[in-house]
Image 1: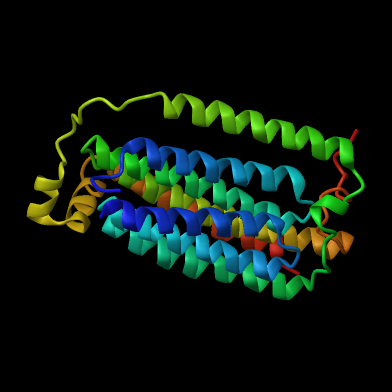
Image 2 (image 1 turned 180 degrees about the vertical axis):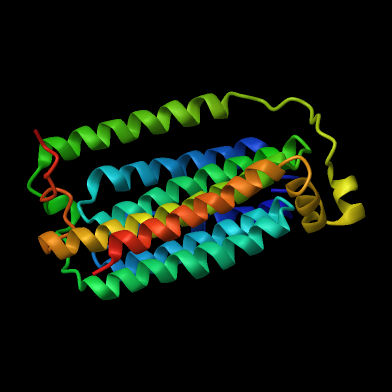
Length: 103
Length: 168
């Protein structure tokens, strides 16, 4: 095990992390944990950006990662506020019990 | 040498990521997520993105996870049933199928794909001259100035939205 790590190794790690995030969103019922799984997916995408930035010798990927982090922070702030409001109204953060918009 | 750092960091990222979605107590989920963030931060260092690595620890492991833990504390959540004991089996199976399909779709093309020669102008030699942070700053205030300013508007809207939603 010598030499440099190829780009594909980073991309596969990122893909697996992303899929773990998708699995979390699909199987968990707790809205907070679903949010954490979404963070996991955002981080997987960030890893792809940084890996390509390194291997294409371009800084643009790292700048985009900064923007993704800013949007993620905004998303978490608003999302957690929504969860608090939901918990106040329904006494639950289980996504199966939140069906106000269902037709 | 690079592999010696990459393999443990990648293993740590994967194990803690799986723990995030299988642990029952949301506090433990949040702490596992911190582990994932630290492992990814190490991988960013390996990719010579020092600034991103530091921001990852400060913003994600610091700010965002504290926000999560505060909400867990405020809401006093009960324990969730473990995944394999949930009633809704057909939907779980469909979910597992989607996950496996997505994994194959992502990993097979990546595995069979080979990268072309690098073509950008910010190779390690030019980064070595001025440093990663300076380069990020210079790009942020020249080529990416407009998106950078719009980011501040997004953050302002998020502050106002969070206050309006969580008030009272």
